[in-house]
Image (cartoon, rainbow, N blue to C red):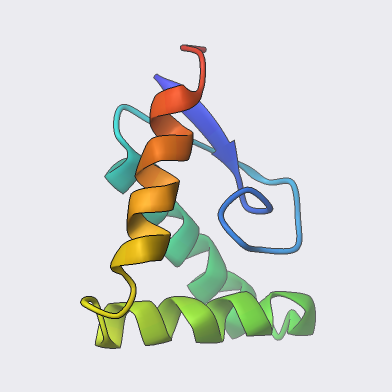
Length: 78
């Protein structure tokens, strides 16, 4: 299990996401950003817009995805 924060994934806060894989924390970040948007949290809106763009254009976003997978791999186990 490893932990990445919203901020490490491109968001504005320090909410911790825990997962066994980079995909786990990326999906947790997506859910977090959706919830923040739904709650009207404007500080998360730019990150939410970027995340939506990545899901719509996955080939263009492979660089970000690879960077996050590497950042996750470099983290120590919790």
